[in-house]
Image (cartoon, rainbow, N blue to C red; front, side, top):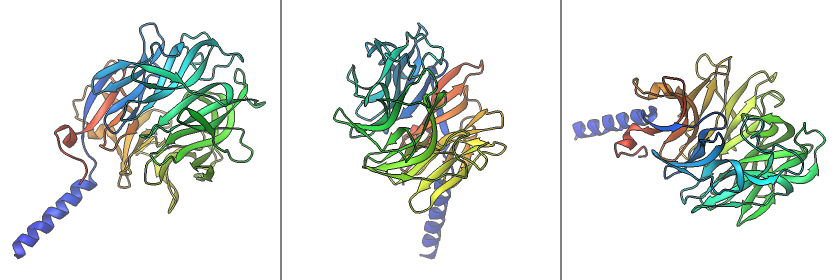
Length: 391
Protein backbone atom coordinates (compact mmCIF):
# COMPACT_ATOMS: atom_id res chain seq x y z
CA UNK A 1 0.00 0.00 0.00
CA UNK A 2 2.83 2.38 0.88
CA UNK A 3 4.42 1.76 -2.53
CA UNK A 4 1.10 2.49 -4.29
CA UNK A 5 0.60 5.71 -2.31
CA UNK A 6 4.17 6.78 -3.06
CA UNK A 7 3.61 6.15 -6.77
CA UNK A 8 0.38 8.13 -6.68
CA UNK A 9 2.11 11.02 -4.92
CA UNK A 10 4.97 10.99 -7.43
CA UNK A 11 2.51 10.95 -10.32
CA UNK A 12 0.62 13.88 -8.79
CA UNK A 13 3.82 15.86 -8.36
CA UNK A 14 4.84 15.13 -11.94
CA UNK A 15 1.41 16.19 -13.21
CA UNK A 16 1.58 19.41 -11.20
CA UNK A 17 5.06 20.12 -12.55
CA UNK A 18 3.93 19.45 -16.11
CA UNK A 19 0.94 21.79 -15.72
CA UNK A 20 3.23 24.52 -14.41
CA UNK A 21 5.47 24.40 -17.48
CA UNK A 22 4.57 26.37 -20.60
CA UNK A 23 3.43 24.16 -23.48
CA UNK A 24 5.39 23.79 -26.70
CA UNK A 25 3.78 24.61 -30.02
CA UNK A 26 3.53 23.54 -33.61
CA UNK A 27 3.31 26.46 -36.04
CA UNK A 28 0.96 26.74 -39.02
CA UNK A 29 1.79 29.34 -41.69
CA UNK A 30 -1.35 31.32 -42.58
CA UNK A 31 0.31 32.99 -45.55
CA UNK A 32 1.40 36.51 -46.45
CA UNK A 33 -0.72 39.35 -45.08
CA UNK A 34 0.95 42.45 -46.53
CA UNK A 35 1.78 45.63 -44.63
CA UNK A 36 -0.13 47.32 -41.81
CA UNK A 37 -2.87 46.51 -40.87
CA UNK A 38 -2.46 43.02 -42.35
CA UNK A 39 -2.56 40.34 -39.65
CA UNK A 40 -4.74 37.79 -37.87
CA UNK A 41 -6.29 39.61 -34.91
CA UNK A 42 -8.40 37.07 -33.03
CA UNK A 43 -8.86 33.31 -32.63
CA UNK A 44 -12.26 32.05 -31.46
CA UNK A 45 -12.75 29.06 -29.12
CA UNK A 46 -13.38 26.74 -32.09
CA UNK A 47 -10.29 27.89 -34.00
CA UNK A 48 -11.90 30.36 -36.39
CA UNK A 49 -9.53 33.28 -36.98
CA UNK A 50 -10.43 36.87 -37.93
CA UNK A 51 -8.07 39.35 -39.52
CA UNK A 52 -7.07 41.18 -42.67
CA UNK A 53 -4.73 40.57 -45.59
CA UNK A 54 -3.64 42.42 -48.70
CA UNK A 55 -5.67 41.89 -51.87
CA UNK A 56 -4.06 41.69 -55.34
CA UNK A 57 -5.16 45.29 -56.06
CA UNK A 58 -3.29 46.58 -52.98
CA UNK A 59 -6.38 47.10 -50.83
CA UNK A 60 -6.84 45.40 -47.45
CA UNK A 61 -9.60 42.79 -47.22
CA UNK A 62 -11.31 41.33 -44.17
CA UNK A 63 -10.40 37.64 -43.85
CA UNK A 64 -11.36 34.51 -41.96
CA UNK A 65 -9.05 31.54 -41.52
CA UNK A 66 -9.62 28.04 -40.23
CA UNK A 67 -6.24 26.41 -39.92
CA UNK A 68 -4.81 26.74 -43.46
CA UNK A 69 -8.16 27.49 -45.10
CA UNK A 70 -8.66 31.17 -45.92
CA UNK A 71 -11.84 33.05 -46.85
CA UNK A 72 -12.02 36.61 -48.15
CA UNK A 73 -15.19 38.16 -46.70
CA UNK A 74 -14.64 41.67 -48.10
CA UNK A 75 -16.90 41.44 -51.14
CA UNK A 76 -19.40 42.84 -51.76
CA UNK A 77 -18.84 44.31 -48.30
CA UNK A 78 -20.16 47.83 -47.84
CA UNK A 79 -19.04 49.05 -51.25
CA UNK A 80 -15.62 50.49 -50.43
CA UNK A 81 -12.08 49.37 -51.10
CA UNK A 82 -10.82 48.37 -47.64
CA UNK A 83 -12.11 46.38 -44.68
CA UNK A 84 -10.79 44.72 -41.52
CA UNK A 85 -12.22 41.87 -39.43
CA UNK A 86 -11.14 42.35 -35.81
CA UNK A 87 -13.03 39.46 -34.19
CA UNK A 88 -15.16 36.39 -34.84
CA UNK A 89 -17.20 34.10 -32.59
CA UNK A 90 -17.73 30.36 -32.77
CA UNK A 91 -20.96 30.74 -34.76
CA UNK A 92 -19.12 32.51 -37.57
CA UNK A 93 -20.20 36.09 -36.91
CA UNK A 94 -17.29 38.36 -37.82
CA UNK A 95 -17.04 42.05 -36.95
CA UNK A 96 -14.85 44.99 -37.84
CA UNK A 97 -14.80 48.11 -39.99
CA UNK A 98 -15.36 48.60 -43.72
CA UNK A 99 -15.30 51.47 -46.15
CA UNK A 100 -18.54 52.41 -47.88
CA UNK A 101 -19.04 53.73 -51.41
CA UNK A 102 -19.84 57.23 -50.10
CA UNK A 103 -17.32 60.00 -49.52
CA UNK A 104 -16.94 61.04 -45.88
CA UNK A 105 -18.93 64.30 -45.58
CA UNK A 106 -16.31 65.77 -43.21
CA UNK A 107 -13.31 64.60 -45.23
CA UNK A 108 -12.19 62.37 -42.33
CA UNK A 109 -9.91 59.33 -42.47
CA UNK A 110 -11.49 57.62 -39.46
CA UNK A 111 -10.20 54.12 -40.15
CA UNK A 112 -6.79 55.39 -41.22
CA UNK A 113 -6.73 53.69 -44.60
CA UNK A 114 -5.40 56.82 -46.30
CA UNK A 115 -2.86 57.38 -43.50
CA UNK A 116 -1.64 53.81 -44.04
CA UNK A 117 -1.09 54.46 -47.73
CA UNK A 118 -3.89 52.20 -48.96
CA UNK A 119 -5.93 52.83 -52.09
CA UNK A 120 -8.87 54.79 -50.77
CA UNK A 121 -11.15 57.52 -52.02
CA UNK A 122 -11.66 59.06 -48.57
CA UNK A 123 -14.91 57.24 -48.03
CA UNK A 124 -16.70 56.84 -44.73
CA UNK A 125 -15.94 53.70 -42.72
CA UNK A 126 -18.68 51.89 -40.83
CA UNK A 127 -18.86 49.18 -38.14
CA UNK A 128 -20.09 45.87 -39.52
CA UNK A 129 -21.18 42.38 -38.63
CA UNK A 130 -20.71 39.64 -41.24
CA UNK A 131 -22.46 36.27 -41.32
CA UNK A 132 -23.22 33.72 -44.04
CA UNK A 133 -21.81 35.88 -46.81
CA UNK A 134 -23.57 39.11 -45.88
CA UNK A 135 -21.88 42.16 -44.37
CA UNK A 136 -24.31 44.44 -42.51
CA UNK A 137 -23.51 47.99 -41.42
CA UNK A 138 -24.25 48.89 -37.81
CA UNK A 139 -25.54 52.25 -36.54
CA UNK A 140 -23.33 55.05 -35.22
CA UNK A 141 -24.18 57.80 -32.73
CA UNK A 142 -25.07 60.24 -35.47
CA UNK A 143 -21.61 60.55 -37.00
CA UNK A 144 -20.29 59.05 -40.21
CA UNK A 145 -17.90 56.37 -38.93
CA UNK A 146 -17.33 53.61 -36.41
CA UNK A 147 -15.75 50.21 -35.80
CA UNK A 148 -16.54 46.96 -33.95
CA UNK A 149 -13.53 45.60 -32.06
CA UNK A 150 -14.93 42.38 -30.57
CA UNK A 151 -18.00 40.12 -30.52
CA UNK A 152 -18.94 37.63 -27.78
CA UNK A 153 -20.60 34.24 -28.11
CA UNK A 154 -24.06 35.79 -27.71
CA UNK A 155 -23.59 38.30 -30.51
CA UNK A 156 -22.92 41.25 -28.20
CA UNK A 157 -20.45 43.66 -29.79
CA UNK A 158 -18.14 46.39 -28.48
CA UNK A 159 -16.34 49.19 -30.29
CA UNK A 160 -16.53 52.91 -30.97
CA UNK A 161 -18.74 55.22 -32.99
CA UNK A 162 -18.77 58.86 -33.95
CA UNK A 163 -21.38 61.28 -32.69
CA UNK A 164 -22.43 64.42 -34.56
CA UNK A 165 -20.62 66.62 -32.00
CA UNK A 166 -17.43 68.41 -33.12
CA UNK A 167 -14.31 67.89 -31.01
CA UNK A 168 -12.12 71.02 -31.06
CA UNK A 169 -9.08 69.02 -29.90
CA UNK A 170 -9.09 66.70 -32.91
CA UNK A 171 -6.23 67.26 -35.35
CA UNK A 172 -7.24 67.33 -39.01
CA UNK A 173 -8.70 65.46 -40.74
CA UNK A 174 -10.63 64.09 -37.73
CA UNK A 175 -13.35 66.50 -36.55
CA UNK A 176 -16.05 64.59 -34.65
CA UNK A 177 -16.13 63.07 -31.18
CA UNK A 178 -16.19 59.27 -30.90
CA UNK A 179 -17.52 57.28 -27.97
CA UNK A 180 -17.22 53.74 -26.59
CA UNK A 181 -20.32 51.75 -27.52
CA UNK A 182 -21.92 48.33 -27.49
CA UNK A 183 -24.38 46.90 -29.97
CA UNK A 184 -27.06 44.29 -29.27
CA UNK A 185 -29.76 43.15 -31.68
CA UNK A 186 -28.68 45.82 -34.13
CA UNK A 187 -29.12 48.67 -31.64
CA UNK A 188 -26.33 50.90 -30.32
CA UNK A 189 -25.76 51.97 -26.73
CA UNK A 190 -23.24 54.62 -25.66
CA UNK A 191 -20.97 53.89 -22.68
CA UNK A 192 -19.91 56.63 -20.28
CA UNK A 193 -16.40 58.10 -20.28
CA UNK A 194 -14.59 59.55 -17.31
CA UNK A 195 -15.29 63.18 -16.49
CA UNK A 196 -13.43 65.47 -18.83
CA UNK A 197 -12.70 62.81 -21.48
CA UNK A 198 -14.49 63.67 -24.72
CA UNK A 199 -13.57 60.47 -26.53
CA UNK A 200 -13.32 56.75 -25.85
CA UNK A 201 -13.27 53.24 -27.28
CA UNK A 202 -14.39 49.80 -26.18
CA UNK A 203 -11.90 47.11 -27.21
CA UNK A 204 -13.38 43.88 -25.82
CA UNK A 205 -16.58 42.32 -24.50
CA UNK A 206 -16.86 39.04 -22.59
CA UNK A 207 -19.72 36.55 -22.60
CA UNK A 208 -21.34 38.29 -19.59
CA UNK A 209 -21.41 41.66 -21.30
CA UNK A 210 -18.55 43.23 -19.35
CA UNK A 211 -16.56 45.61 -21.55
CA UNK A 212 -12.91 46.69 -21.47
CA UNK A 213 -11.56 49.85 -23.07
CA UNK A 214 -10.46 53.39 -22.40
CA UNK A 215 -11.38 57.05 -22.50
CA UNK A 216 -9.09 59.90 -23.36
CA UNK A 217 -8.59 62.43 -26.10
CA UNK A 218 -8.70 62.68 -29.86
CA UNK A 219 -5.27 62.50 -31.48
CA UNK A 220 -3.51 61.99 -34.77
CA UNK A 221 -4.12 58.53 -36.23
CA UNK A 222 -2.44 55.90 -34.03
CA UNK A 223 -1.21 53.01 -36.24
CA UNK A 224 -0.85 50.74 -33.20
CA UNK A 225 -4.50 51.12 -32.17
CA UNK A 226 -5.73 51.88 -35.72
CA UNK A 227 -7.70 54.77 -34.22
CA UNK A 228 -7.42 58.55 -33.81
CA UNK A 229 -7.07 58.10 -30.08
CA UNK A 230 -4.76 58.77 -27.14
CA UNK A 231 -6.15 56.60 -24.29
CA UNK A 232 -5.61 58.09 -20.83
CA UNK A 233 -7.77 55.92 -18.54
CA UNK A 234 -8.10 52.13 -18.65
CA UNK A 235 -11.74 51.28 -18.01
CA UNK A 236 -14.07 48.38 -17.24
CA UNK A 237 -17.79 48.79 -17.87
CA UNK A 238 -20.50 46.69 -16.25
CA UNK A 239 -23.83 47.85 -17.57
CA UNK A 240 -23.91 51.62 -17.15
CA UNK A 241 -21.30 51.70 -14.39
CA UNK A 242 -17.62 52.31 -15.14
CA UNK A 243 -14.50 51.44 -13.13
CA UNK A 244 -11.18 53.24 -13.58
CA UNK A 245 -8.59 50.44 -13.42
CA UNK A 246 -5.79 52.81 -12.44
CA UNK A 247 -2.30 52.83 -13.93
CA UNK A 248 1.32 51.85 -13.32
CA UNK A 249 2.41 55.38 -12.47
CA UNK A 250 2.06 57.11 -15.84
CA UNK A 251 -0.42 59.71 -17.02
CA UNK A 252 -1.10 58.08 -20.40
CA UNK A 253 0.31 61.06 -22.27
CA UNK A 254 3.27 58.95 -23.40
CA UNK A 255 1.98 55.75 -25.02
CA UNK A 256 -1.42 55.47 -23.36
CA UNK A 257 -3.28 53.74 -20.55
CA UNK A 258 -5.90 51.32 -21.83
CA UNK A 259 -7.61 48.00 -21.21
CA UNK A 260 -7.38 45.85 -24.34
CA UNK A 261 -9.06 42.60 -23.35
CA UNK A 262 -10.74 40.60 -20.59
CA UNK A 263 -11.91 37.06 -19.91
CA UNK A 264 -14.99 35.59 -18.25
CA UNK A 265 -13.34 35.54 -14.80
CA UNK A 266 -13.00 39.26 -14.05
CA UNK A 267 -9.42 39.47 -15.32
CA UNK A 268 -8.62 42.53 -17.46
CA UNK A 269 -5.40 43.19 -19.38
CA UNK A 270 -3.82 46.07 -21.26
CA UNK A 271 -0.95 48.51 -21.09
CA UNK A 272 -0.03 51.46 -18.89
CA UNK A 273 2.62 54.13 -19.01
CA UNK A 274 5.14 53.95 -16.19
CA UNK A 275 6.10 56.98 -14.09
CA UNK A 276 7.51 59.63 -16.39
CA UNK A 277 5.58 58.29 -19.42
CA UNK A 278 8.78 57.23 -21.21
CA UNK A 279 8.01 53.49 -21.08
CA UNK A 280 4.94 51.26 -20.81
CA UNK A 281 4.25 47.81 -19.41
CA UNK A 282 1.59 45.14 -19.77
CA UNK A 283 -0.81 44.84 -16.85
CA UNK A 284 -3.28 42.38 -15.36
CA UNK A 285 -6.14 43.78 -13.28
CA UNK A 286 -8.50 41.93 -10.94
CA UNK A 287 -10.98 43.31 -8.44
CA UNK A 288 -9.12 41.57 -5.62
CA UNK A 289 -5.56 42.65 -6.44
CA UNK A 290 -5.99 45.76 -8.55
CA UNK A 291 -3.49 46.52 -11.30
CA UNK A 292 -0.38 44.31 -11.56
CA UNK A 293 2.74 45.05 -13.65
CA UNK A 294 3.59 41.99 -15.79
CA UNK A 295 7.06 43.29 -16.64
CA UNK A 296 8.95 42.39 -19.83
CA UNK A 297 11.10 39.66 -21.28
CA UNK A 298 14.78 39.90 -20.24
CA UNK A 299 16.51 42.80 -21.97
CA UNK A 300 13.30 44.53 -23.05
CA UNK A 301 11.88 47.79 -21.72
CA UNK A 302 8.25 47.89 -22.89
CA UNK A 303 5.36 45.42 -23.13
CA UNK A 304 1.65 45.13 -23.92
CA UNK A 305 -0.92 42.50 -22.89
CA UNK A 306 -3.23 41.87 -25.86
CA UNK A 307 -4.90 38.45 -25.47
CA UNK A 308 -6.18 36.49 -22.46
CA UNK A 309 -8.16 33.26 -22.12
CA UNK A 310 -10.30 31.91 -19.29
CA UNK A 311 -7.31 30.06 -17.82
CA UNK A 312 -5.56 33.39 -17.33
CA UNK A 313 -2.92 32.76 -20.01
CA UNK A 314 -1.84 36.07 -21.55
CA UNK A 315 -0.07 36.90 -24.80
CA UNK A 316 1.36 40.05 -26.31
CA UNK A 317 4.57 41.70 -27.41
CA UNK A 318 7.57 42.62 -25.27
CA UNK A 319 9.70 45.33 -26.90
CA UNK A 320 13.32 46.39 -26.67
CA UNK A 321 14.55 50.00 -26.56
CA UNK A 322 14.29 50.19 -30.36
CA UNK A 323 10.68 48.86 -30.26
CA UNK A 324 11.61 45.54 -31.82
CA UNK A 325 8.80 43.17 -30.70
CA UNK A 326 9.25 39.75 -29.07
CA UNK A 327 6.07 37.69 -28.56
CA UNK A 328 5.48 36.19 -25.14
CA UNK A 329 3.23 33.81 -23.23
CA UNK A 330 2.51 34.80 -19.61
CA UNK A 331 1.42 31.76 -17.61
CA UNK A 332 1.38 31.02 -13.88
CA UNK A 333 3.17 34.29 -13.17
CA UNK A 334 6.02 33.68 -15.64
CA UNK A 335 6.60 35.48 -18.96
CA UNK A 336 8.22 33.21 -21.58
CA UNK A 337 9.37 34.02 -25.11
CA UNK A 338 7.11 32.24 -27.60
CA UNK A 339 10.06 31.69 -29.93
CA UNK A 340 11.61 29.46 -27.25
CA UNK A 341 8.49 27.26 -27.31
CA UNK A 342 8.41 26.42 -31.04
CA UNK A 343 10.62 23.95 -32.98
CA UNK A 344 14.17 25.19 -33.50
CA UNK A 345 13.85 24.49 -37.24
CA UNK A 346 10.59 26.43 -37.63
CA UNK A 347 10.49 28.27 -40.99
CA UNK A 348 8.80 31.19 -39.22
CA UNK A 349 10.24 33.52 -36.58
CA UNK A 350 7.34 34.76 -34.45
CA UNK A 351 6.99 38.53 -34.27
CA UNK A 352 3.69 39.32 -32.49
CA UNK A 353 1.17 37.37 -30.42
CA UNK A 354 -2.32 38.85 -30.72
CA UNK A 355 -4.88 36.41 -29.31
CA UNK A 356 -5.14 33.16 -27.34
CA UNK A 357 -8.25 30.98 -27.08
CA UNK A 358 -9.50 28.50 -24.49
CA UNK A 359 -7.52 25.66 -26.09
CA UNK A 360 -4.31 27.66 -25.87
CA UNK A 361 -4.11 28.32 -29.62
CA UNK A 362 -2.31 31.59 -30.41
CA UNK A 363 -2.37 33.76 -33.53
CA UNK A 364 -0.13 36.60 -34.60
CA UNK A 365 2.49 37.81 -37.03
CA UNK A 366 5.73 36.11 -38.05
CA UNK A 367 8.66 36.60 -40.42
CA UNK A 368 9.84 34.14 -43.05
CA UNK A 369 13.55 33.58 -43.70
CA UNK A 370 13.29 36.14 -46.52
CA UNK A 371 11.68 38.76 -44.28
CA UNK A 372 8.14 38.43 -45.62
CA UNK A 373 5.38 39.05 -43.05
CA UNK A 374 2.99 36.12 -42.57
CA UNK A 375 0.21 35.28 -40.18
CA UNK A 376 0.60 32.21 -37.98
CA UNK A 377 -1.35 29.83 -35.79
CA UNK A 378 0.57 28.28 -32.88
CA UNK A 379 -1.05 25.10 -31.57
CA UNK A 380 0.00 23.47 -28.28
CA UNK A 381 1.79 20.24 -29.21
CA UNK A 382 -0.37 17.97 -27.08
CA UNK A 383 -3.50 19.56 -28.55
CA UNK A 384 -2.19 18.96 -32.07
CA UNK A 385 -1.64 15.33 -31.09
CA UNK A 386 -5.24 14.99 -29.93
CA UNK A 387 -4.61 15.63 -26.24
CA UNK A 388 -5.96 18.27 -23.94
CA UNK A 389 -4.38 21.21 -22.17
CA UNK A 390 -6.92 21.08 -19.38
CA UNK A 391 -7.06 18.59 -16.52
